[in-house]
Amino acid sequence: MTQETMQIIDSIKVDLNAGGMNTINIILAFVMYGVALGIKPRIFVDVFKKPKSVLLGMLCQLVLLPAFTCGLAILLTLAGWISPMMGMGMILVAACPGGNISNFMSSLGKANIELSVSLTAISTALAVFLTPFNFWCWGTVYMDTAAVSADIPRLVIPLMDVFKTIFILLGIPLLLGIATSQWLPKVADVLKKPLQWLSIVIFIAMVVLSFSSNINAFLVSIKYIFIVVLIHNLLALSIGYGVGSMFKVPFRDRRTLTIETGIQNSGLGLVLLLGTSIFAKFPAHGGMLVITAWWGIWHIISGLTVATLFNRSKRNA
Image 1 (tube, rainbow, N blue to C red):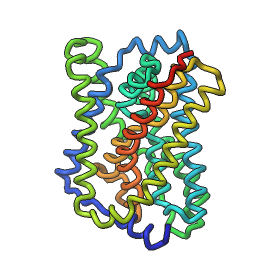
Image 2: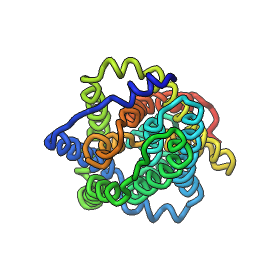
Image 3: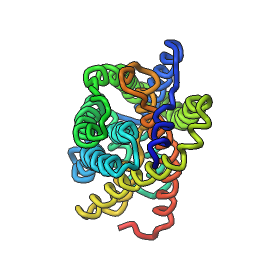
Image 4: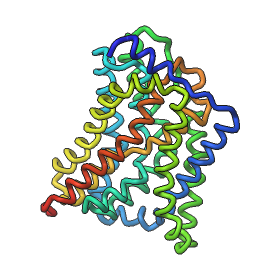
């Protein structure tokens, strides 16, 4: 990728007024409430009965994916294939919890649905703390290793601001959703699936609106972004399948680990970029925006593809 193309990608900017930011924040809170409707307190208790696959899933999603993403971003940056802001976008996506469509993908792929729900529940609950921590930790490693050598201004990642934002946007809706699931199970059952699909529609609408005023820059960048996200997503899927194979978990669990690690809640990353002032002091960071937005679209395609391949496989042991 040429330096000129990187500058075009990073120059993409979406300006939102206070009303627009508040609207996006409310939408994310609503979506996270829908995710939490499928979470029951007993899920966290059941983890201790058969912990191996759950612990491996947490290892893949919360430790290995951010760490390997940081390494990949460093290599691509030093090779001149991506800008530092695109690398930060990769790390932001990797720091987000599992996507809320992973349970549907696991069902389609004849994977362990109970394990999928458990992993989604736990990663979402822990995201209040681990999303800001992983973004700060691996973002700092990346900036110190690759971006500083690219001679750009030093970026300070506001760890506490990220934490407070995620707690308000994620933690509170999560608690309300779990409470609804526990005390109003019939209401939760009615709302769960419609809200799951609505969240996909909302995300795509957010992406379209975000780039409607930057359509030329988006068309120039998409072929490069496609390749970067493809490589990154293949890495995520490979981590899940590789760890499951290495530790010889049942094949249904292996499928779940693959899907859960390969599907990230990039909607959260997009809202952090568009709906908050966390990144206001960053230099032009359209690369973060494009990577995060395209990931949210691509992981639906890759997830459906992987789930279909699993569905057609005769191996279930």
